Image (cartoon, rainbow, N blue to C red; front, side, top):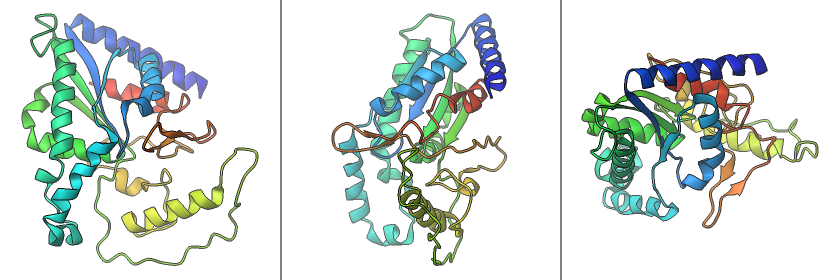
Length: 270
């Protein structure tokens, strides 16, 4: 793992240097998970900079309360909500507006918004975590002009495919799960219960492979490169009204130091 990480970091640094030689400025725009805020991604951002050499990173400036704005769209269109057919607009307009603002700030710093160095072409990497990846896809569909400067879309544990039609809940055997593992400070029983219920709803298979919330089969997009991470969980934090609850370091997620080098170099793909 260490040698693979070293090779990935070296290749990433070369890619950043090549971009500079072509007078291109590279940045990353992160779309957070539901109720996620910038503070939840500080460790991921640090590791991302270490691995890729990309310094300009912007996180969509959502507050936890912003998600309450989805309620009016739901209540005014209950039939569509029940059918799982709520339209992207106006349901996600609050997120799209924050994406527009974050993109404009990042593009300006990279030289594409009038405030940066002239003659530098911005190259923006879009990185979505959980529902943030799904929202990015809807945003790009509504803002096709973004594709002129956004050359990579990467999603981390995002529900990119619809659940199977007519999937039925089945019984889940958890008799062999430990209620609490003292060695790692985690509850395999609780984690297994959460994963099984989510996997079953999204893929129809309670025992699918996944990150503890999103099954791998649902996260994979057609005609895209897929990177599977061993023992990687959905998030390293649990959102709360104040600061998020940080999960134990043994609970590896996409932003963990050992995980970022396995996927981050893909952001610099040509």
